[in-house]
Image 1 (cartoon, rainbow, N blue to C red):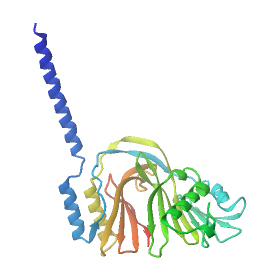
Image 2: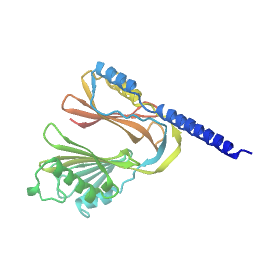
Image 3: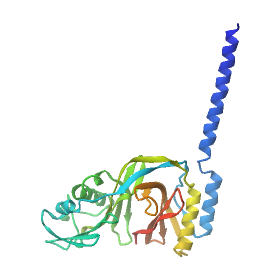
Image 4: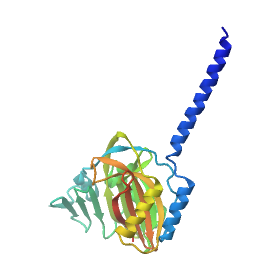
Length: 301
């Protein structure tokens, strides 16, 4: 029996099978990658409708699992003690809203329990970790001051948040936004926005969501060009915007869709758009449904 011939035939068959499997995997991957033609077409459509594209466009849109997530129940009194000092404040509750006011200053904390948002307001400015007379406002010192506030006043898990943007506003102040992340994707419901002037920190907006890993099976998502077209329709038809717009950032994030399951964060497209030189806002679109989760969140004016 000629075993060498049989071995050679088997090797050839295995080689052919490997090539076929590699080709199938490649073709499967290619169906979830935005083509150059798709990208060119959507950019042209947006430009014809007064929206310039000044950002990279996500190329991959393969099916994704959802994240088991939930809005964080804050220990707002523990935060208040770190912020004001022990018993250095008075508390007032109105329904789902808690307002905490300093005994010593005009500083306040407002906590909206249903939305999980905490707002700090410091009309006279607030410093952490630096002396006011030593503070010279730059992008770097603004970030250092914001991180000190996050670490010393908010504590864990905000200390691990990543800087997303550091904007110089039209009145020459800095607005910094930090996000938590999971497996390389930003968590839209875990973010902090800090507004810094020459007086120090004047206000902070803080949202926090917890999570416990992925859940369910992979679900298809819309491609980036389809999401960009949905964005254009939402802003022009839904919001009635006729001014020229500039799409300056676009990326996939996890976001809790309150219309669906509040205990799950879905993959979503986070768009940052500007109108003129003064107004900047975010729109978040559910990547599984192509419907807005967040209509227009003003982040700079």
